[in-house]
Image 1 (tube, helix red, strand yellow):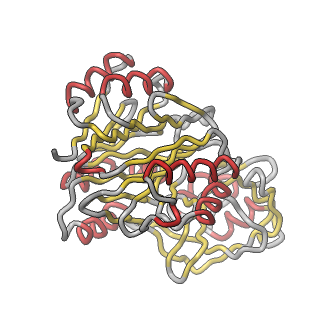
Image 2 (cartoon, helix red, strand yellow; image 1 turned 90 degrees about the vertical axis):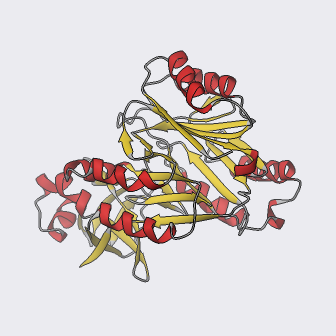
Length: 366
């Protein structure tokens, strides 16, 4: 059975669940992955979808915008249904507290038990991992660092959103919803998979070093010994008053060779500049300049699709979405994904080898 995707903008939980069931059916659903606007009551929606879609496992999260084949949406639900032939063996687990390393260790042991093989013995070339995390916990870095310490399996995913309200985000598994936690899934796509990471920036030549940081709150107080907003604004040729309108095109990047791992500002506070990612004192960061998201994404996807693919899950940063909207490229970006069944969402951060911003991390199913 081919990978199936669906979208609904029905307002009530029952009508949305019924609409998705009409489109996806419930025959041989092994795994359903869905992403839903925070306008829906997440606990009720999780229970309704798990009940009506008949999947062995159903996982999802709240969003700040949804992605479906060919389009970016808002205030809706998107879903992908995989049969056992598409997913292979599936193991899932919820962790209720991102900060609880012991709970993560137990979760990974449970995933191994479900697969019948300890995760340390599972081949990372054949098994893919998905991770969905609370987007307001400020715990993603520690969680993903611990995940990397405990397993070599590749996990790709994102931080749940709440339509830019910044009040509460949710992750869900098999009809249950929680805030403050994470959901993990490991499966073995029979035809293989590929992880894609793309961001659209070049180095500007300027550099900033955080010299005073409230690391717990992700707030930089000083760059290069100067008030953070003043130093940042000067580095991008702006004024502190205009900084928040300019930084979407000029975030900071932790460089690995020529590849940036993006750290994006969230807001100017009384103390300094708050970021979506952890910031470390003394770590040099490059000031970045944005390029063409649509062209860059199309080029990366065209290369990946030189081989057949059955589906794509796109974890796309909310700041990329806002940048696309500001440039009038929202429809053009959606059209890039007309070529393969796609679902995804606008995230509060992306996961792949750590926690990053203004990036799209994608799981391509062969």
